[in-house]
Image 1 (cartoon, rainbow, N blue to C red):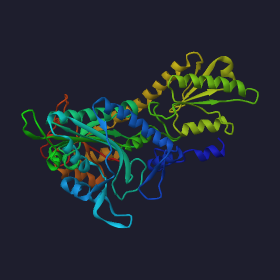
Image 2 (image 1 turned 30 degrees about the vertical axis):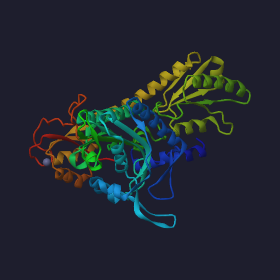
Image 3 (image 1 turned 90 degrees about the horizontal axis):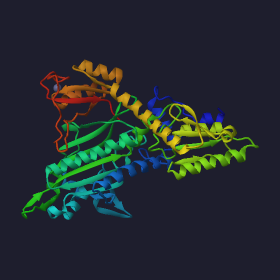
Image 4 (image 1 turned 135 degrees about the vertical axis):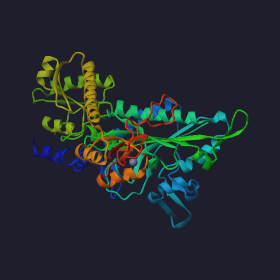
Length: 493
Ligand SMILES: [Zn+2]
């Protein structure tokens, strides 16, 4: 390696200093940079391209299932936030306020949206007159601001973050539940099929649900460092928001009824989980499904072979591009092949094609997998199919590795010592019977900063109401009192 390529590389290791390693991968793989104000980041083109990939995958699914996109203002009048006391109590300390516009002091403070229920709900009330207007399903892609004073961690902890928030209204409870499961299914699909991250589905304990919600369901992903990431949430809001904001409708008998509402969101924390799950000490690793560049072609030439090698490489690039593969022909003159290899590795390009004069003469291509440097030589003939097979194989291996990590790291424990010891030693999830008392969570949290990240769900069968199955043993793993619920403890991001 040249000095230049060493500078380019990652200096921290994932296993020893995951925090520093993560920050370095984000910056050196050109995903994001720190903004001048603490708590904010600048998303660079490669990072934004990943976000766009996630957006595309979700937005397509939303639209196929009856959702329309809308856009509401960044600011919410204070009086609107006040209308739903639960929401205000939930978010008040984290709200950023605008008190002045130009030189004028505002008559009413404006909140920078921490979430948009309180401005969207009144309009949903307006748009919902008759049972024929239901279900109403809208979504917006935007950013929200929560003024939490924590250390900045790109995509995981920032005061402003990008997300989508879906809001729906239904004529009955069954309709709302069906909606909650549809969105949770779609989040699960995007994590598993697009980001190659297996997730657990569950619900948040009562004391940790979204303010005002009946039930908050979640998909949780386990990171290689043993911490859980809340991947996305889908809330059944019951009638609390509909009551507060008069979302009512005339039923078939012209009787006025109160609607049932849901909301659901996924943020760019998904990018954080993606980086953390697959990447290694050489830099970013991305599954081909989300990689902005899936294949980098690096031609290797001497002065007398340059034309031949480049022409051969270009034909292959054209074939791949025509087949819809996101391919980059790296024909930069000023960089040597070694530098290019390192750079594409750092940037997480899943598959590299190396093409020198031997390959051009023999009608062959050398393929190198990013995640494990596995090498193969293939015929030029049928290169599109070959490349697609290799991309699939790379995806499968990344998924399998993440799945093994998840499967090996759900453990049972039945006493406080056992819970603390298991999380302390292995990380991951600890499954235990729970009495339902928040104090039992606190007892664990105080000692090891792990909390109840989720409770498993009964088989939903389409229209369940989010019940938690009964544990096999009947004593709470923390206090020993009777327990009829199961809880998963873990440290979390
Ligand atoms: Zn207990």
